[in-house]
Image (cartoon, rainbow, N blue to C red; front, side, top):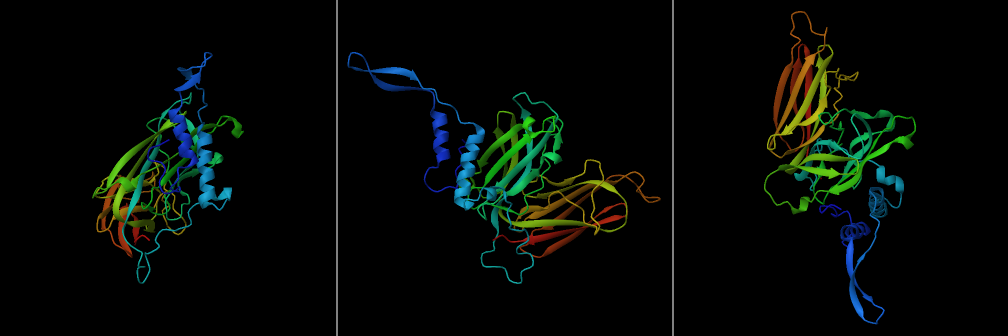
Length: 359
């Protein structure tokens, strides 16, 4: 299995999973003494046939260990989402003694990089991608769709999963664990025709990193059916920023792309990309962002971007229907809120950044 695997999620004893992985790696031709017919010992080459563990068997060992260690032997607990909300220190009168900037993880994208095992584009993908940290070791979902709500990936150029999380900041105290359980929907109505796209898990060894600054990296994961790519960052001494966008005046349908970044790294987290379609707005005016939680170094800079355009027929008389490009810059705080505005023609969008220390 992965060299990075095996952080503090396990006891200090070697787990059954690690032992099984070593057995798989070391399987093959071995030498051992054998007693010959003449009563003497001789060294002979003997091929030992050992069956390689299947991905679902390895994942099941990992799942069983988690249930025993953290799930109180309740199998359903493995899939439960984290119940810790964001903004836990945004409005407190006095910050708890435990509140401080912490090392965190920013997740930029998860994508299917290439196909194998006879799969061909397009793919109707469903299932889960989640991450666990030592805040509660529960699933912090990044992607979660059932079979009736697949995402269609059309090509290697259109293979990014539409992430909807994390729902709160991912803390890097002990090593976090990524979990991937994705399937491809078959052409028939029965799930028996579906195929496993990727069933895997891996850890990020944040404990080994001793650098002074934040940095981003890409992790490649291979399965029998595909190769997947994960892009994430180790953000040093960060606070949590929860972003809320709301239409406060004007009217009109618009398409848009909303992004966020911590200035020290300079890579965008996509909060919403409507891909030319109408952006969904709730009755109270809230823009329904797919993601809204990011992390920023304390006293660093958060940069929010918007690229948007009014849809046909929505521009007022004398108003340009062209694309609007905006960037807002905020200094990260330990609590409270920052306020800014975007405009698309006559449509005014309020941006509220809710800051929180981490505990």
